[in-house]
Amino acid sequence: MRLLQWILCILLSVIVIVLLAKNYLLKKSMREIYTDFENFLSEDTNVQITVSSGDKTVTRLAKAINLQLTKLRKIKQQYSDGDRELKEAITNISHDLRTPLTAICGYLDLLEKQNHSEDTERYIEQIRNRSEVLKQLTEELFRYSIISSMPELSYEKVNLCRVLEESLISFEGTMQQVGIQPEIQMPSVPVWRTLDHSAVVRVFGNIINNAIRYSDGDFEVHLEENGKITFSNTANKLTTVEVEKLFDRFYTVDTARKSTGLGLAIAKTLVEKMNGKIEANITNKKLNIVICFPE
Image (tube, rainbow, N blue to C red):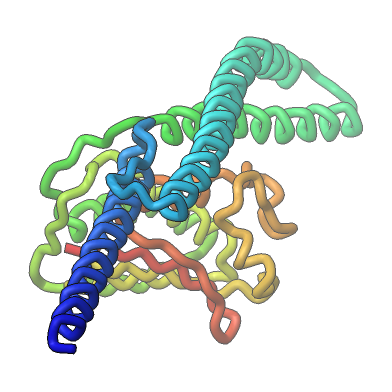
């Protein structure tokens, strides 16, 4: 009887040890799957998931995940190739349009020096306006394709107060022409961030230009010490739906027919490349574009 008890104890011990070992191997395999999967997502590696466990269920799971990862890799590559081809096409088209546009503007300059009837002068003015819009669009397309494909930015210490002040000064003449007196609030101490200086200049320039275009006569700029910048202006004709689309490429609203629809898209691309955040909202008929560059 005692011998039987010993045998049962030994069998139970063996079963427990086997179960513990299997549980350990199972957890180890799950950790391997998790680690390999995380590496694939973060590093885009081609190495497939491997498991040390001989468990058939775990092995089948690893194979199924590898199959889906292979499909995902192919889709990602197709998207990357298509995106690259699109950017190259945009660059080529914008470049090829420059020469004929320059010629058209040159002929318009010659026509404007001659005497014409009022109708002809009106037609020439319309052609001039449309040519300028198309010229601006080709320039913005070219800039957007360059910025979108830019692999790295050149980072340095940037004083947001100074860059913002210089950007506002550069638009002072334009704001005076449309009767805008900006209200500016800045901290008394410099706000330093590690950013790409030229990218910040372009972001501020695009947003200020957009504010002047949409504004109904006012413009407010508020820079806080935490790196948050708010650009506000009254925009009675803008709706919530339109505001949600302001950062979409080529999107324009009726109040901005001369816009290419790329200015804010470029600003968004650059801000996010510098690990910042940008959003737009409308409150009490005021359009607010908010940028935040964390420390």
